[in-house]
Each structure stands twice: as C-alpha cells, then as structure tokens.
Amino acid sequence: MLSSLNEWLWQEKYWLPPNSTWAQLEDRDGLVFAHPYHMLAALPMALVLVAVRIIFERFVALPLSRWMGIKDQIRRQMTPNPVLEKYFLRMGQRPMETQMVLLAAQCGLTLRQTQRWFRRRRNQERPCLSKKFCEASWRFVFYLCSFVGGVSVLYHEPWFWTLALCWENYPQQTLNLALYWWYLLELGFYISLLITLPFDIKRKDFKEQVVHHFVAVGLIAFSYSSNLLRIGSVVLLLHDCSDYLLEACKMFNYTHFQRVCNTLFIIFSLVFFYTRLIYFPTQVIYSTVFDSIRSSGPFFGYYYFNVLLVMLQILHVYWFCLILRMVCSFLRKGQMGKDIRSDAEESDSSDDGAVPEGPQLKNRMARGSGPAIANVPRSRAAGRLANGHTQAT
Image (tube, rainbow, N blue to C red):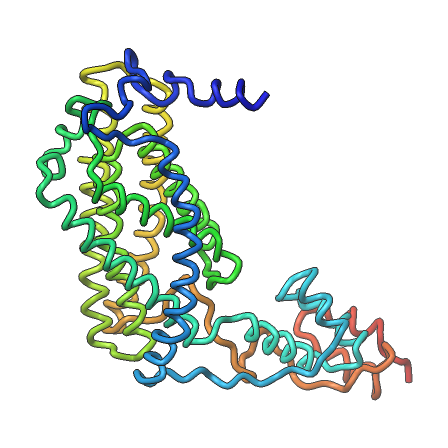
C-alpha cells in the first residue's frame, strides 16, 4: 500500500519536464544533484531554530529592549467573573449592547462595569511591547543574515542576473553546496514559523500570514525536489531584501526612535514596491511562465509552481494596500503611526459604547425606579431589554 502510494507520488510526470527521468539526476562522476530526501533535514533544522529563537529572545532581545528603554504598560487586572469569562472565551470578546445588558443583569453589575471588565480582559490578550520587540528582533536577525548569505551565494552566479539562464540545461543542473545549506535554512525557518504560530503575535493579517507560510514551505520544498533551485533562490532573496527592513522599522518604532523608523519605513516601502510589485511579476513570474517551457513542454509541476507564485503575488498586493494606508497616514501626520495590523491598547476611559453609570443590577432586579434604568442603555432595544429586568414601583 505505502510502496504503491510512494510510486504514484513520485511519478516523473509530476515533478520533471517531459523526457526527463530521475535516473538522469543520480549522482555520478563527482556531480551532485538535488534529491527530495535532502529536505528531510529541514525538520530538525526547524526545531534547532525554535530553540535558538527562545534563547535569543530570552538572553539577547529582552535585555536589549530594557536597555533601549522599552517599558511594558501596567495593565489593571479585572475582577474574576466566571460568567463573563465563559462568554469571552466561547462567544466573543465584544458582546453586542443588548447582550451586554443581559450579562450585566446576570452578574449584578452595571453596564459600565461590564464594559470595563471586557476592555481589561481584551487587554490581557494583547501582547506586551517587549514581546513585540523580541519577536521583531529575532526576525530581523534571521532575515538580515539570510539576505547577506543569499547575496554571497548568488552574487557570482550569471543566472541570478539573467533569469533566462535559470532554465539552461534544466533539470540536469548540479547542486551547489552553499546553495543547499541556504535553501535548507530558509525551509527550516518557515517550518519553525508554522510551529510557533500559536505563540506568536496574532495581527489582523494572521490568516494571510498562515497562507504565506504554507505557500513558502510548498514553494521551497517543491522547487528543491524538482531541481528548480535557481529560480527558487531568486524568489527567496527577493523576499529577504525587504523583510529585514520591515522588522528593523518595527524595532525602532517600539523604541520610539521615530526619525530612524520614518527613514526605514520609506526605504522599506520603495524596496517592497520594486521587488514584489514590479520585478517579481514582470521578471520572475514571466520567466517561470514563458522561459521555462521554451526547451520543453509544460508539466504538472509547471502549473503547480506558477499557481503558488501567483498566490504569493496576490498576498503582495494585499500587503502593499496596507502599506499604502500607512504611507497616507505618514504623509498626513509626518511620522510613522502604529502598525495598522495591530489592535490598540484600550484604557479604562475608552468609550467602547459606554453608557452613563446606572443603578446596579442584582438578581436580575434593579434598585430604583423604572424610568431611571430605562435611560441606562443608548439603544432602544437595550432600553426595552433593561426595562424587562426592572422592578415596578
């Protein structure tokens, strides 16, 4: 059963162009080729990177954040309330106003006290500033090292400057040992990001980030297995050259070095625009669509690889729209604002649909007259609901 499945999965028509076989890619006469089983080393590499990240954030990034003056905001604790906690975890973090009235009545609290409890509870879910700095620091260090390593590996390759050469003598292209280790490191990093997803900061583009990580893993693993290392390495380096700028921008924003942050943000926006919205579709995708099949016909891997590249391009457009919103805010205010993907900290003075302090509700009955309670909620529906819990006088 497993052997037949393995034979079906590794059929040459899926992974290699027509008239190419796995036998042609066997190591011989001192020539080494890429083999799919090489990528198995990415799993222990990912675990090593997770361990290195934990050590780095604990003993390097966190002390650095303290040295640079980052102080986490002291958050006021909310009074434990099993009813509100159950609703928060199961139903949602932002109850509708009518539901807020019911919860207030059930817990014997005023509406303002209930709203304040939810605000403080939501703040408990938000990551502190030092955690954001540590995460950005780790990614900055990795992306910068990866970018420098990628440039050192690819700079002297003629196919890096002329993408049409990526398909010369494909798929019988020998493996560069330095390129293998760089590729392995990149794959291990993206797998490590998938491993740490439950613990990383969840921003508004969390779903898009998850899609990006899976697409990246799929592209790296497939391109290596199909010996598409040349064009795959170009895609990796294009992403690294702007990613480290973004993480550096975050770090200086968290530490309130505003001028440095503003400068880096402008550079990052320009680099992102050119590499991902101009060069990537007009050069890389063009080459994978047209240059790749000039010497051989299309095959399954051709369509699969290009679909993943198009998915990446869609994510690039989405993220550039977010960057444009931040650029507009930057031009209006003259400085970088907060990351629009992150939720702002809520203070106890936040309105949040707050209503004037009313009488306390106990045992689903209110003290005082009916008209006084009817004025508590803003909406008519909430007012009628509150009247349903008042005691006639």
